[in-house]
Image (cartoon, each protein chain N blue to C red):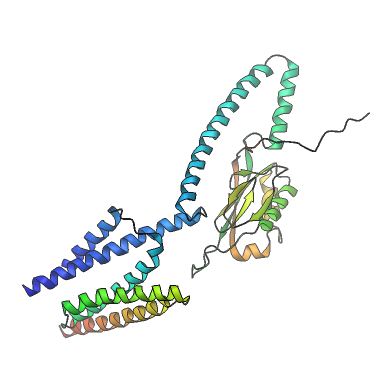
Length: 239
Length: 112
């Protein structure tokens, strides 16, 4: 009887221990998820979810409207020679302003933060806005025709800057402690040599991150999703 | 045997059962787990050296975890990380116990 009792107590305690351990594991992984999006309170979390949902819906609407414009354009360009030329020009301007998805040969640069053995500083800033600006500048200087960072298209009006605990590009956040992917379309050999030239990548970034690059013949860069608005700049008419 | 079955049931319970413990208790549970692990290692050592007593195990299990949780709470209120003391002591004891278990098991294996 006594043996049975002690066995039972051990069993119950093991149930407790197992429960606590697995529960804690679950909690910690949940917490990590929560800190990923830089939100800690459930309200912000749910709001974030809702906004994400509405973003997807709005994106769908944009895609629908885009499809409609494509139909109209195709209709218009077939009308006569003039509109065909106009259409071609429009396409080129679109590529320039980032208004259309583009593909072609180019390179992908991966900036992967090195793991800290002690893991305590997982949220430490590894990639700085200035590093990204520097790399983008190098790519631009090497005649890159289109550049994106984490699939955010860079345009002539994109800023890259630190804000809070993220880097903001075109009003979108990217984490500075996770892998950043820079894609560029252009002559791939030229781009690779530009990036691998000593000094092209800041030394501090080289210390804190591993940088790898990949040449590819088919790089796809998404379009810029916002509308341009010119409030102050007006074209000057020459007389 | 009972222990393994119990552990398995506990793990499954923890994964399946969605009981809501507030997140702010998370550090307490962490330290309590450590305390419990310490008593489990103590019990293992006891059973290997044939002086395991269930009452001591049970009281140690709950006592240790309660004390550890109390210490974390106190440290939280006083603003000093007392939980480090719990982690260091329990961690050290787990290693000690493990060393003794190892020795006993190897001796046993050799004597056969």
